[in-house]
Image 1 (cartoon, helix red, strand yellow):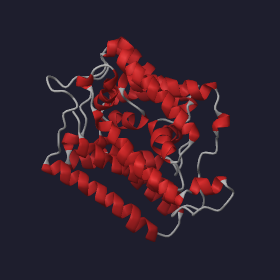
Image 2 (spheres, one colour):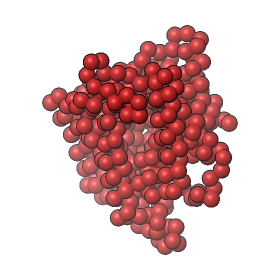
Image 3 (cartoon, helix red, strand yellow):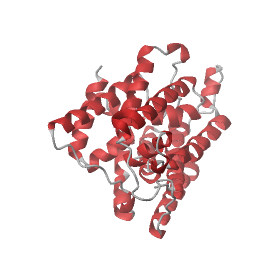
Image 4 (tube, helix red, strand yellow):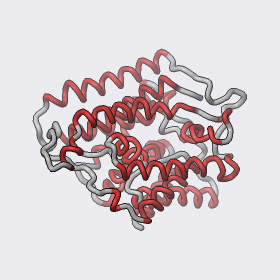
Length: 329
């Protein structure tokens, strides 16, 4: 169902986590590279973020358990295991060769006005849209019973209090607390965890962690009754504020012009992608398309997959195994 308030508040948390990591730690919140890096090359730059993201389940479980998605049953046959492993492989191979996913390209890349991210997003979104609607006759897209999925539903008082509190606390941390902290490796590591926590809460509250809502967003192409417009609000309240913040501070633009941009709050230098449109090759396009196929088949991308892994370990073991295998190619 359409969740305008949930998704808007969740999108603001996605903005807080991603923009905070950029302007405080000087790094892009690309979950796919952070996830593979935490396994193949663990460091203080990736492990705390992944730990923070996964720990977002704890406050939601304690204070607003209704926000935890309901997932399909875990694989219970060899065919289901093979299919799940295949989707995980596509996620891993696609995000590695496409150099990112919905976080690194769509949320962070577009807001940084990266031409490569515009191209990657166009490829994987189009591929996901076609896959969701036409693979298996569009049967992967859920219905909402006798009620059209575009009918809005609103949070309970307890949900609204929790979500509003999370947004306010994230804003206070990012704008009031962190600017007063001295630069150090310790403070950067701590904020990496905080940024991951903010982003994980954003995924859960916005509905991005709910595969059914993601697939429902793709349904506008063939079946309006199954169309859930919630995730369009990610563009308005997630990408929009990030774009505004980047234009006003524009560290990447300053560096590209050879000028000294404003320093990150907690780091000594910026760690921004340096590849250009000229670096795009067939693997980049094929990777973005492969990720789009996986996203359209199951409605899952790396960040939500991590959260689901904690809730469905069998599914997670198979999917993450395929993901890491895909990263090796």
